Image (cartoon, rainbow, N blue to C red; front, side, top):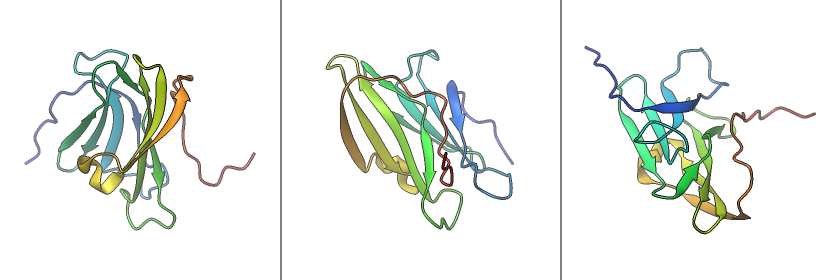
Length: 132
């Protein structure tokens, strides 16, 4: 029996677009408990089990749209990394935050300081074979 997924307001959804066939098990998006922008949470939702995992960056933090970057030669849909820029409104700095997708619930595996704030990089995609 499937039950309704708990209500979590989420925007900017992303899937692993290279996965075949087109039945997706995982969903990533940006959220905020109050339900409006600016977002401070990254949400990973298992569409098969309805389990949701929420990473909350905290007060005065703004997360960008999460990106899924598959590992080279992935073994399944969830084999890769989740990335998001996190902007600190108080210190006026930004960082790139990285999670291993399979163990998202354990928290970030890396953070890289990006220095002063820069544009929020919303609505993008990772395309491994793109070469302009």
